Image (cartoon, rainbow, N blue to C red; front, side):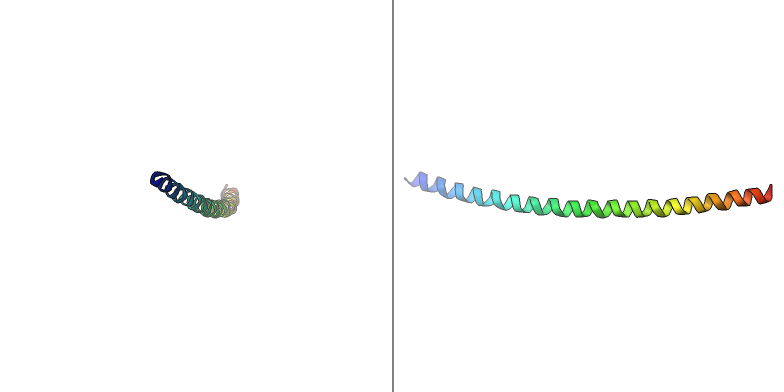
Length: 69
């Protein structure tokens, strides 16, 4: 009988810890998604700015090259 009580106690503890793990894993996944979204937004904003700067530089050097030719 003692073994069965011990088993049930351990099983209950295991199930509680497994549920805790599921909660923590879900929170981790949520935070990772938020982090990944921020990284993507930062990259997209950088590339948009880089594109504008590149276009302006091309325009500037094409005009300057046409004037000096």
